[in-house]
Length: 450
Ligand SMILES: Cc1ncc(COP(=O)(O)O)c(C=O)c1O
Image 1 (cartoon, protein in one colour):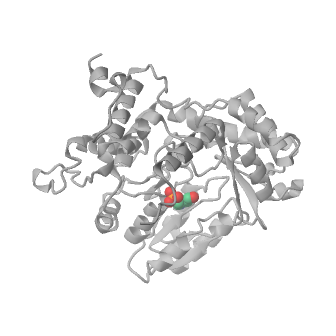
Image 2 (tube, rainbow, N blue to C red):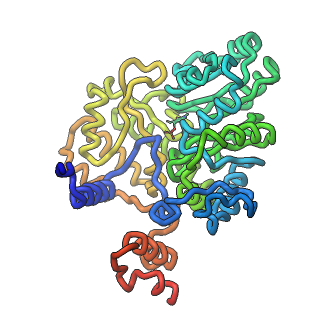
Image 3 (cartoon, rainbow, N blue to C red):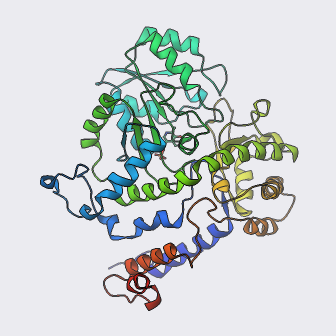
């Protein structure tokens, strides 16, 4: 038998090294989020291996019994909390991610093959996958555009809607600094094409919507919204769907029956814990994200970097786009330099109407980690020095490591807190199951007996 490429000790070493470097670094990738330790707990436990289908709790429907004892963690935690925070009558927590939600919505609400749907052109920040995915489902795709990367031409939209009468308008802002005016778009759709449904993909904005700093799409008249739970929302990698319309909900439920089997029950419970925590801090966190993002745009500009959309105040959400080419540094080089300084950012082509590549960053995770006030000035100093290579990367990395990265908003990670001690005991039990010894001080029994 051939030797495996890596041994288990190598795997553990790589994971340990990654944890150590993640502990000293800061992710500024706008499409990623951190979440609290306690919300991660289900991912390590027995429930991670279990299916759960019987939402209704019908005794005749426990065909899969593994998740039976934990049913209420979905039905009485994740689902009602999502409905409450999203002000929706009906929700689905079955999608696995943003693209999973997109597939479910296009397949459920886009109409049978041959139907017309409208999405946003990549020129106004539409997601790269939507048109190809819809086409693959047999739908005919029409794109809405606008005068600049940040808004829609509603008069043009009105004409196209009246001519095409699509089954669905799917608003898929992905590279986005400013949210689409959903209320005006919905009004335009209702007048020009009354039978058309409107879905807002809030993958990028979910934390800002549930935190109340962006308008709730349902309040603005949209039929549904949803998407990833791990970008501005500090939750697990998962997807959600929300509506107030029972017919829309039924169509989605019918389709998800055959489109999704495992919905990753443990991640669904993680999402419930993340929502429980978010109910407490979400409004404050969401306000801090948008304030920090705008402020960071100004701080980088003051230090000589070229931040796009300066004339509009840089951003209304969590993303900032940097034209480092204008500062004499190719985006990939800027990203490499930032990486060596402990700052993780995107460099990419495809930002709306940006020729070539640019650097894309987000202030969502730094905000969740607790950065505020003068710490943002320090981050801006380090960021600029890294891009322009005016200081050695090791010095900058040491400064990044000194920035706070506690989960300021989530469950406090104090190892003496009874909740954290109980979580640690569960982790130790999960790792040692079938053979290993749980250290006495970490045993579930010792914690329970305290
Ligand atoms: C609008 C939108 N929809 C869907 C996705 C895909 O999400 P996920 O990576 O969770 O599948 C993204 C990711 O950037 C997005 O911005």
